[in-house]
Image (cartoon, one colour):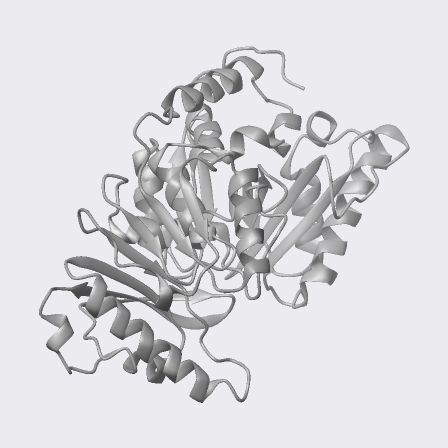
Length: 397
């Protein structure tokens, strides 16, 4: 869409939508990539950026669900002021000709605008009425694959109209065609790995790896692989899209990617052969077969690791279904025993949605970080597996 003209550096106000519990570390990721004035919010962080930085965030960020570019804000005390504000919000002749489809996403409420679907309909009507005034025809609505995605946020009498640069959620990396039961979202997995401080120089093991998401995200981070380089972004249809600047940021991301000369030791165990094969398929789709090893075996039967200690990450089942409790208590008890026996000197990070089950580990957590996993209130627990742990009977969660 763009002509490759140079932008004068402009200060863009943006919002990164983040998993609950990752607001602080998500803010640090934004800052590391050049965003300014970053402020953590609930399930989000606001920031300022120039266009090059905004492109960079889309290509290299691992934690956001979405990145929103604020276009305008106006007072909104109901349906009429919303309609007028939207009609004047953008140069619609420039941004949304009838040949382009669009979608409207809504968060928040205002008087008389309490339902997101109804509010989105009012935005759509305002836009297409303006289009009819300009051209005598209108855009079509495409909920799945629009050319432009508008995002409206209503809060305390203000309306903020933004553009969604990706359209689809950024957590979908494209490698996970195969998912196990209760899959962990990729961006949450990436954030959990970042919280461990693991940098790829020590071994990483997951004794209950499922579809392999924690291990894949860890490997991608260690090797600076950016799956977003393979996807299409809606920002490429924006009226002020700068092709030359975009290609420059793509090249910048590619240069950061490391070749696999001394790969980190990353290993996962999965006792269900079918799910282990799903994990291998996901690893292969991510281009990490030479880095991530998936073993179809029960962790209780695995040999003790040799060499330097590293990090164990684990997202075991929480027992949401009835009837799981006794079986899972035994699983956690045996997991704790194996870790204390074989992984002295390692660090354990375990995602827990059940305090009673983690008590069965008979380990004392050093750190507890609240996170939300699929709407479940969870804790990302850190344990130090020192060599005296095998003799410890301290119970903690």
